[in-house]
Length: 337
Ligand code: NDP
Image 1 (tube, protein in one colour):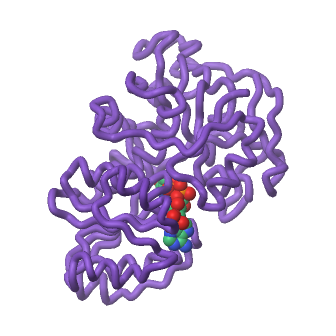
Image 2: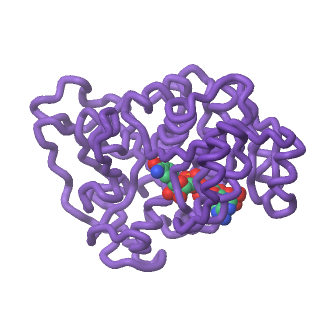
């Protein structure tokens, strides 16, 4: 089979689409013929070898939608021919009891990421593909959808009437954060860097929009909610926004973070945490059960995938560039050539 492999860290030219041996299913594994996969920021961290180094040679990819091709001898939860999406947390139920987590395609077997024609994954990591979306749309869901779902539903306990400030609202996480707000009758305040992106946010249900390039985010938030601040800030840019996120949360509000795109060395004023009792909450991925809850909302038509574009594996470099240069509206998807 062929896969997108890199043998050294570097620019887009280190990505090679080449033949490697087919994976072999263990007793509790399944082999999935990948119909579509997606680009995530961790693919970029992996290729750059920074801020954390991945094992080399490496195949990235933390999302997949496809068809079961083979099952291990102990597997009875799925059968050959089933259409599935793959959950990228390892173990699949990680964090249920505060366990450590590995991310498929990043720090879980180096040569077994999703950017391959065939993947081997534990059977407990596959869930049925929603029947109302294409493989390309399905592949755009798992990693970012489960993360956004867990952040808002399980970590903050979002409720009707909450005002939720969403950074990167037209990005992979953001497009789902907006739709989750709408589902819970909360008010989404979408922040993005262009009016075109903000149009997308409005179409997904954002009630308020802020262009961070042309408007003063603090002042705009104050115009919307007054001095009281917002109940929830959906944080992930990191260094560039974490301090402001904390300030924009109201007394007793919650800042829930899952990333550090702009850097991890953030400066925050601790007085907001102890005096104003704002909670700064960390979150990563979610369990396969959280993913199933969110996919049920897709199946019921409450949450829709947003696909920026679809590229063949051989154009993985261009696909990663679009994500790295913040051009994506929603997810960039890859398909086997
Ligand atoms: P995307 O690239 O799809 O979107 C990120 C958005 O962040 C961009 O669209 C951009 O929006 C915004 N952004 C970038 N830099 C800044 C900045 N300096 N200030 C304000 N906004 C900025 O990425 P994802 O949504 O998929 O992921 C976002 C981050 O979350 C990544 O770092 C990723 O690694 C992390 N992540 C972590 C997970 C976890 O489980 N811990 C899971 C998923 C993602 P705009 O320019 O329009 O404002």
